[in-house]
Length: 515
Image (cartoon, rainbow, N blue to C red; front, side):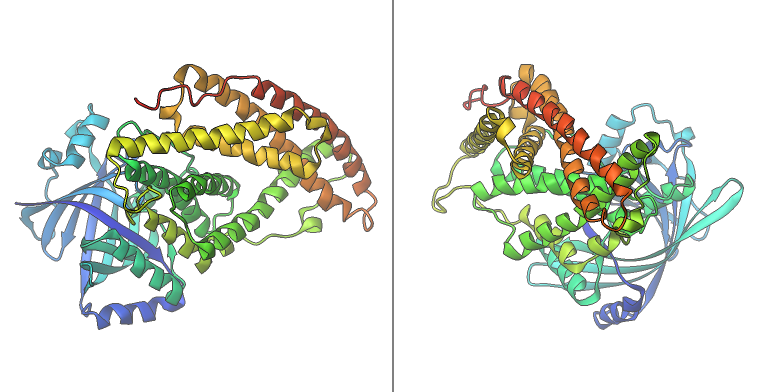
């Protein structure tokens, strides 16, 4: 028995079918002449306790050799804890599995912590894979990478019937060197072969297949803890990873061309908004995405916003109009929108995502003076000072507009909404640095206000679109009249909620910066 204790860093790419031959040639030209047959059984409990806790446990036959592997997800969607144990068993018959073989590895220790009541007798084969892999080791100036082109199937027995899904993907795994090398190669494949990122692992896809599901639930933003961050770079990496976790999972689901994609689209846009807020903090520390990346970001965000506008008409406005005896606004009369994957699969969007990932590994200094070498505690102090300054400025902006809300035009109200979103997402990022006794109440107040402001914005957009339809369809006048009257009511609620918010004590800036 041989133990290999490694952490895995890799990026998985999907690509158009017509690029398979070119990618195969690329790997063959780098030594990947022979294909390897990989047959794996994924082990879990009947209720998938391991998968739900973020683990993958498998036995895989590579040639005649069996290897047992335990993987654990991390906050970084491209990194996993991985422990491989080469078993003494060879041949076709699958050996017995033994989780105790991983007890000395970080993944095994984390499993015991998250699943303390797990019993070996509860484990069983949940799904299996049959893959042909063509791989090549590529040496670079920074180290070495492994390209692995996988083709095959995942299959599971569901309701006494064997079901399967196809696998065709390219993984680029870091073997030695720096993660930036992996990301650089990923960019080349995106540019040259129209590849796009997919963070759904074989174990996730197997879980979905075994449960008769098309996709995992849309990924929402998860709580962030910065208490263990030792310096500014760790803070930055933690925040970027949090945003990417949400963005990459939802764009992967959209790229799968789901029929019901509204919630994934919504959560993707939330993740992009959180990134937008983070860019403001990074800019204060001289860390930038770059003009080309920012332009791609803005273009994609605006395009995806068109889907949100149509969702309001079809999902919220039409039911109200019909209940009042009014006409239904046909989506086709506004605009038929194609599946949003045409935006998320786009190369410029994918390249922008890789550029965001790269920021975590650039090791940029937060100091304005490159010669200034601040200690870790001083770096954290500086980050918290920047947070307070930006939040104070945002809150002052909101308070000023609240005092003269009745005079504001629609576009000015939208600016207030954007500033409140900045404050809300900032509070989510930096909750550990806030006053705990004031956080919950303040956060609820700003969330309530944003509900009204969001509804007001939806109405403004709908009015603008419906006004253009009234000449061809006079029935739209009913909808237009109702919307304009309702907009006034909601505007009043926006003003009241805003005044309530600005009377509250902010949740930040009250903890000493010396702690």
